[in-house]
Length: 321
Ligand code: DGY
Image (tube, rainbow, N blue to C red; front, top):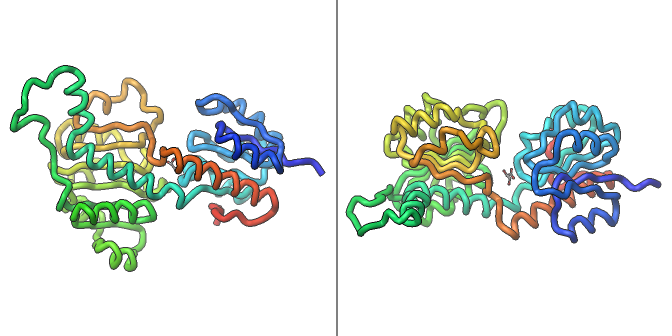
């Protein structure tokens, strides 16, 4: 019997590649940049499994070039880069890596919230540029996090983990979600409100929804206009959930006070992007889940999902409906 062929679009730890290689022939894109489309297409033609990253667009056209493809396993919790409906229609399983990155991503969301509120990156630039002359009562003053109101849009696993951290900061917690979560309300002391109420009342708005047709452009000019002029907006979900032109305008016109972003409509952020000209925004390069242990756990889980599907079993984290 011929061994299945799995193509990995990025190198992961050697022992994880070796684990896959016990059962499959393996190809790996060795460079630390996204695999070019032409290479991915050529590899897909002979692949039984694709082990992919958020940077790879796995669409119907690619699947049509992949007659043997049985599984697409993504090393991410988000799967908006994969056309799941097209995969399902072709009998291709899609697996992801939920759970293992929850706490790490919540740490980053809260770090970004704190950095934005207290202007940490701006303050560090100020010091490094030799501008620090003396302590001053008005120097780099920010906003208090302790005791403030936090609005979480999308109270899933990561949203709950952010809320747990917020409890330690005595924050009042509001949330908005597709469906109400009574058990989370009880455990976290979070209050369900409609989106407009959340935007009006929150000092910190944290966006954590997955990207779906319903959440695309969820936050635009109308929503920024509802927010307090002292509010901080934090996005750790996907760039496409926000109208970025409206965000730039809201920051420029001080409609909101500041923003902290880990994700963008176009990644990497183009060097001439207007966000780069603003000093009331903290910009991170999509590092929500980037800790050594979590990236390893994600890589392992993606390998397990891939192997299970190729064995004909139901993967633990199957995305297809
Ligand atoms: C995910 O897992 O979806 C993140 O965005 C990548 O770490």
